[in-house]
Length: 229
View 1 (cartoon, rainbow, N blue to C red):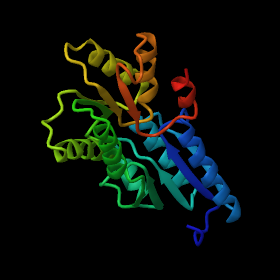
View 2 (view 1 turned 60 degrees about the vertical axis):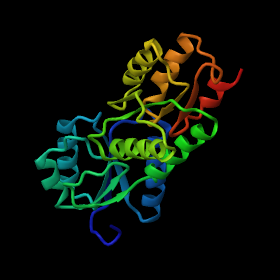
View 3 (view 1 turned 180 degrees about the horizontal axis):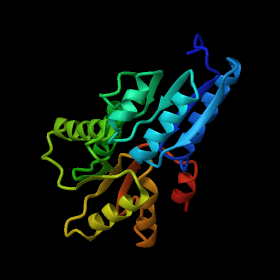
View 4 (view 1 turned 90 degrees about the vertical axis):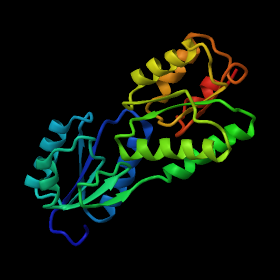
């Protein structure tokens, strides 16, 4: 990208609610300053139409490159625009977009988390995560199932996947707590879902970890305050 003629690097992300996105923005901005680039931020709210408009605007502004966390239903027009500029995908992998991907070691992280809960003696672990229609959601769910199967346990009954929103976390957690047989531990596979999970846990006065052990993938800075008694 530093060999390109443009002076703009576009950053296209779903939202800025989480500290993670702020950290990504700061890091990219710092790198751009060193190379005399300007960063242009676009927030899509995971809306393919907004994403298309944002990418088009960056291409028309002759951006030197685009760093993007693509939506699940990335439009063909958006992908055509991305072919016109150097592109790097971050966290999410849209296979129809021909670009390198930078992401976490999701599989290892979820596997380690599951094995930790198993080591504590939990034989029935619930899982709440992103939809398996997304690459990250699919990878994390597969890693969870592999770790459980590797321990010689039957398939887990309590698995909920859906949109990476706090509201989904609330809904899924409510269903788990209302079930006749509640798991002894819960693994939350998305930091964006975590706030909704903790809202319900707090509202219903569930004793953690006596009544339910909880392990989340991706910490919030305020999580320690929730757990402190």
